[in-house]
Length: 463
Figure 1 (cartoon, helix red, strand yellow):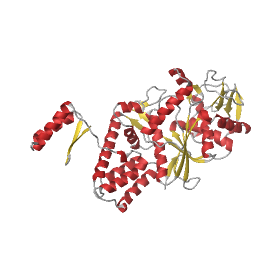
Figure 2: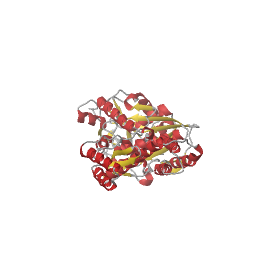
Figure 3: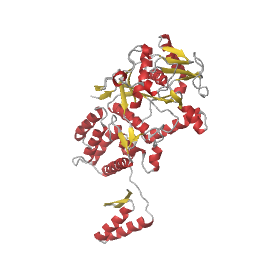
Figure 4: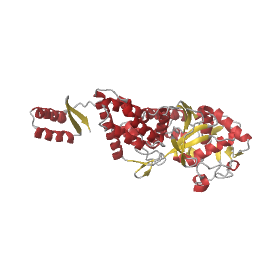
């Protein structure tokens, strides 16, 4: 039984698909005005794990993700300036060039992290027609009003506004986070369509029934998700920061237009934080995947680190924690290589209990820390032969996404003092001078290498 924590209701629920054996998933994609930081990427990793778990359970998955290349202001609630415009001014490029550059960079990161690409990737700028049509539907229902040249959503006309964020209970007021907009009847109201009266210098503009302008940020997800997944689908994902405003407004738009329930399960990932606090582009303290690569880490080291914490728990980023994840993944790869060299056949009956424990863990609201515990239990089980361990790890990696089958032995080319010391140690070992051999091992390891004596000779790796 697959259980997921539904933000709508704040409880863990058994997953029941709209169509038997199928699941429709919409995930909020990047605003492509800068590189994705590792906090953003944690969300995409958790969503990838969710998708892989459905595939692991035999579901047919239809995954849709948007690319926000217009309409997202620096403040989530209609405040600030357009992020694409800001980036274009910062880099001396057109907004279109900025969008293309950072979209490509985003998908390079996704590939490095072994994140399965969405079945449908939809750019906001390519779906203006659908957004206008949705706004027209809301207009015909009397849920909108025009003021100051812009079109606003009137939240007083939608009785369930704020049900996702528990706005009334938690007193999470969008109005407290935005600049005063004299055109709004209520601070919760939000813009569906901007005209030049808001940002006359905006590069990306389109003709509309309300004047030349561009869409608000929230309308794109409603319009595109319904186009590709229908007016009622299974799952909508994102980071917890989307709950009080973005996802709350999406529900209001979508259900206001259709008059029925839009999404059955809302699943949100917690923040990745720094030891000094939250990370963010607006705070100027964000870390990219390339930053980690430049410090000698692999993207999958970071993926492994994310698996060590539950997606609904904050994960504190620190280099020593990433180093620990790197070492754990390296050990797992080394074990995989060792098991591959062993002879024997796999007895599927012996693997059944491990697969059941792993499935129970991942199906319990994506409990990846528990799933990793099962992985290591299988790795260290002396009652399993190498073929059986390979079989179980290959099976688990369908969810983990660590590319274990691509594990290769490291070939370290030694030069200088390290090479000389290793050669001296080999001579000492052949002469059975174990004391000198140990002394030389210590010197070699102090240079940043790790030695492992095998029947085929000494293997040298970097620490």
